[in-house]
Length: 316
Image 1 (cartoon, rainbow, N blue to C red):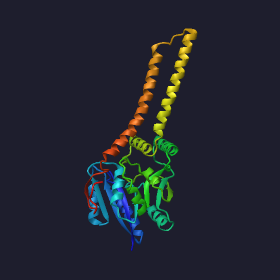
Image 2 (spheres, rainbow, N blue to C red; image 1 turned 90 degrees about the horizontal axis):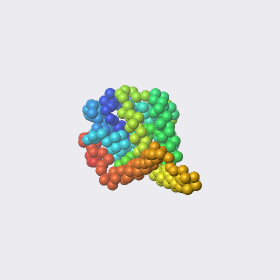
Image 3 (cartoon, one colour; image 1 turned 180 degrees about the horizontal axis):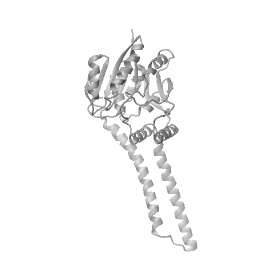
């Protein structure tokens, strides 16, 4: 009996590139004799004709499934929905913009079927075409998070990954609301092979990831897989207390010995603002962790499905 490969494709305002992607992925599928395919397009609350494009594909190809969210829940929610609705023996996540080359899929399948890996992940060895500043901060993020987290997150790692059914089932057990899949992939473990390739630019359309969105996403990753910021805030607080104690002793000693009063208010105002800034910074770190906890406790669904042609119609 032929094994099935589920292809999960998150989409947000991708009407231009979606038909191009479908053409490329079906070419690859046609060359992979002995495997059945299902294509799951997850419409993440698109404002354009993405959903209609998905419906057109589903009408002409019964392998095409679609899930449409009630609003934009984010790529992490879209990937989770695709994983939850997938039925394949192997599952692959790839971007619709063709920055994840479909041509690598046969090599990925071979690694799981023949070489005994549980998943095959991909990473970019170059960031050609990206703004220099964006590339710099991306590299800094990976360096920082790998120093403060016990979960390894590979520099340049993509969400493009082929997984065995056991690997997928393990991921689905992690039903947390604040998701950072690059970390979750590493956290569940298993035997993973890495494939490297050079950066590929989008086939059409515009990227939906601004610098600010990537920055916030990196903060999500750090807080999801490390408590180091809390430790840092505690250390900063201790250091500031020690500095303040030394300063008090010095001022008292100087006044008693030399009768030199404390100088004017500008320096005092600067010190107060500095200490106040440190306090707010540390309080902000604690607040962010508390906010994440609050979100998890509310136990709201990761996504809400408005429309789908999959068999498993439910909210998760």
